[in-house]
View 1: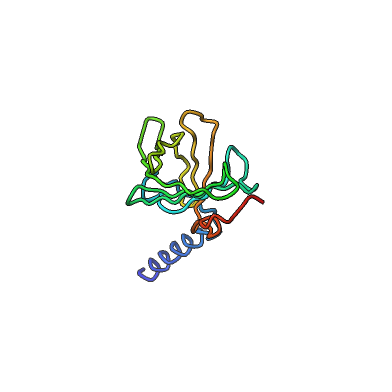
View 2: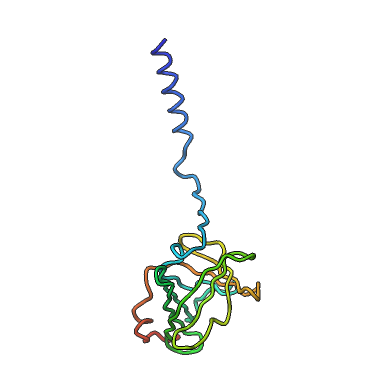
Length: 155
C-alpha cells in the first residue's frame, strides 16, 4: 500500500511539473510609481505616438534618495542642453503625479505628468492638463558620453 501511495504521489508531481511550460509568455508586472522604481536613467522613446528616431532625444536620470534629476535634451538646440533640479511624486485622485523644479531659480516644469504603465523597463507619462500629450520612456544604462559632453548634434 505504501509503495502504491508513493507511486501515486510521484505521478501527481510529475504531471504537475510537466504541465508547467518554460515557453509560457511572462507578463510584465506593473510596478508602483515610487522613488525607488523611478530611480535610474530613462530615455524618451515615443512622444505622442512618434518614435524618437529623428535625432531628437531626452535622457533623464532620477536620484531616489535626493529626489533630484539630471536631464539632457536637444529639443530647442542643435546640441545637448543639461538641466538639473528636484522632483516630487504625489498620489492624487488621477493617479501618481510627477512634477519638478529646475535649479538656479528657473522655476517649475511647464507640466505635471500622470505616470502610468510603470514597468521595470518602461513607463508612460501623460501631461495632466492635456491627456493627448503622451510620452513613453524606456530604461537605459546611462546617458551616452557624447550627449554628456555636448558633442552629439542633429544628423
